Amino acid sequence: MVQSVITVPGEFQLIQQFFQREQAEQPAEGVLLGIGDDCALLQIPHGKQLAVSVDTLVAGVHFPADADAELIAERALRTNLSDLAAMGADPLWFTLALTLPEASEDWLRSFSRGLFACAREYKIALIGGDTTSGPLSITIQVMGAVAPGAALRRDGANIGDFVLVTHNLGDGAAALALIQNRIACDEPSANYLRDRFYRPTPRLQESALIRELVTAALDISDGLVADLQHICDASDVGAVIDVENLPLSPALQALNNQPQVLEWALSGGDDYELCFTVAPEKMADIAMLIAQGKLSATVIGEIIPGNKVICEFEGEPFELARTGYQHF
Ligand code: ADP
Ligand code: MG
Image (tube, rainbow, N blue to C red):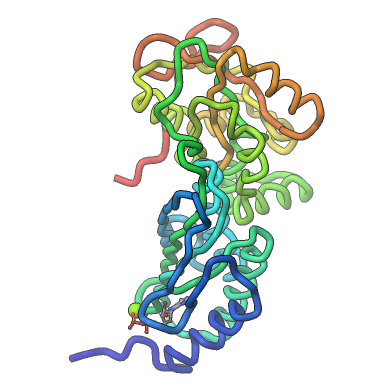
């Protein structure tokens, strides 16, 4: 038997009402044909390369199933935009594959509101997608433009490079602990952490600033140690992290639980900060950006010979219980 996919208010009407109409109000660069046909037709900006990434968020795995739909949408698009930032690409377009247990108008209205608020903020256009019924899951594919040779890849780190991260680490894991009622904190910290979880900031501005100064970069989604290891594997080098230098938000510092906070910062995941490596001769430029208040970034270690990420606390070996989030 062929099951009807979504019945109320009808799949096409639903797409039209919550996605196509909203998108039609936004002028979008390079979209020759948007939502509504079998394919979108897109014109890549002249002389640029296309950077493409896709991520799926599954209810109960990547976000609580009963979370506010507006926030789910924000998180889904923002975490995908983070991949464009990590690649040094400027956002252009995205597609959305939605699997919904039911076609609730309230849920869709809220989802659509969050999605387009974020799309407007980061100037990225929805150009198509797919809508099916089943357990709640959201797949977003983002596309961005990058000049030939300018992409921030993982394979360019050299021995002697400094390792830096943007803003603060550990907030994502602390926020998840808070959302799951494993920790408690004061109201301002709780608001800050919830916002960091549902509305992580894709570091596009930072990416644009450091683009020409870095040897390798990625965004931290699975935890600093696990993700820095990806740079080490791709670049055939090792790295040492100076744990005492990890940047921690006031909210995390206020928890007064250093071992837990350091574990979150090193292996918690969900931070969506950039981790990048800089050759010594470019460090003055980075330091200048930091001193001018244009860039929030901290030196947390160095690229060394070898093939592993090691952690030290004030020069002594620092052992970590778990190194990163793994799905399987
Ligand atoms: P097809 O059967 O050709 O795959 P669909 O019925 O799945 O077409 O979709 C019709 C149009 O609506 C297509 O242009 C598709 O890209 C768009 N679309 C479907 N679902 C979504 C969605 N959730 N968000 C944005 N566009 C969507
Ligand atoms: Mg389809």
